[in-house]
Image 1: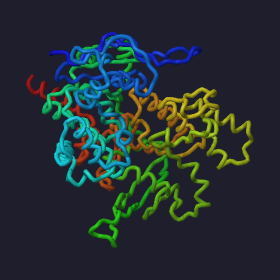
Image 2 (image 1 turned 135 degrees about the horizontal axis):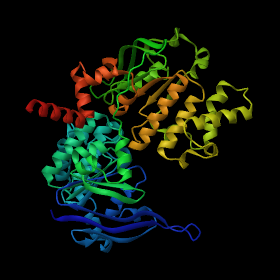
Image 3 (image 1 turned 180 degrees about the vertical axis):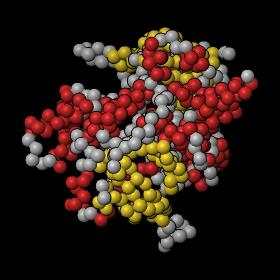
Image 4 (image 1 turned 120 degrees about the vertical axis):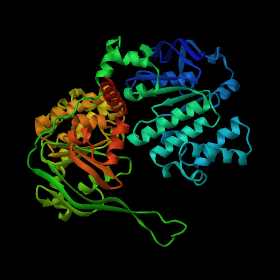
Length: 548
């Protein structure tokens, strides 16, 4: 293959002042992307994956004061010698990029159509009518239904999967030679992930373009990329053929990354007494008025007569696609959203209690949200955040005892007590998740709901959080409701599995039984999408046995 892009001994520093000096972001990076190939770039958060990709487009210098050594060659020419005009022709035209978070990459005040038409007018010199037709064609090609109508939609009116498809359509508008996809499926449920990955593979063949795929999901990369580059702390640790590195990694760090992928099946336990149960729990949301029905609003059923029971000390995995009702179920059980039906906690009907009577029970029913950065107040120190619940439920607690309990809670989740005086923005994603867990467990709850707590964490941090949750449960006998689209994580934690679709329970039972022998077609499709590589290996093994 002919090299398309070559990175030669490239280093990048963030310029500092005279006292602090420059900070190294990348050190001696060398890699090659060939015509039409898919190259994977893997590593933990902060390893330099995205910085490497941004450097290929010289985007780092747009937002930061940086200096570099080495070269990045585009078809033999050093991009750092490009004039502004040549650089504009390279960006979006010859090299396109799919950014990690589509909601932040799309302008919220402009329609999808306006944002799609812009690169077509700028780079392909189309008339507006031609650009609008091409924009609709691109949306349709990425799998969005009724693309002509969707052109008038705004980003907030689309689902996560639809927004990601719009970003892909924008990236493909100028038919680039190289597509850089930075975590293109993070936080998407497994079936949408599968669709996005299949779409990228089809488009790569159709447009004959190369793809640089950046992800912390190693199993995803193994399925798509023949070659892989492993990064750590701004350096390349190992690179080569993907199967070779997965089967026989040379470096200890690579072995550490591969070992962190959840593989084991949780062995089911009996559990204690019935703790919480629901009877025909239902939740409706009004639909917005449409042109056809200006004076009549239909309701959308987010949760449809759901009956469940949860026992003390067990972990219940709740899985399903986006919009299946997982989070609505959690919010309805905690009376954080309006609902109908019954919710019982240790025999008490929660929906019949007044707000004052319910308040003492709040400490026993806690929730850890998906994004700790948005759920932790940026104006409060860690000590204030963790102590907030205690101040509400134990207002007479002395300052010394409050500080002792905060320090104990931080130690339980693996954080130094010195973290108490710092603010959330000073911590990594994994550390912030630990702070959110500390805030929940300091109240000694009986039940904790985790809503996608590991979706944006890399595999090593995921493994640490899984181990932490197991230890806390064994120590305190807490019941967990674990909502996630990552079925590998659920498999390693859950005693019991609940599969949801369109607000209904599709299947429920012992997790080991459902993972081994799912009864419903929907569950089988969900497991097939999430555990595709393992299913492929099993089928290959069965085929080999039949041949022998």
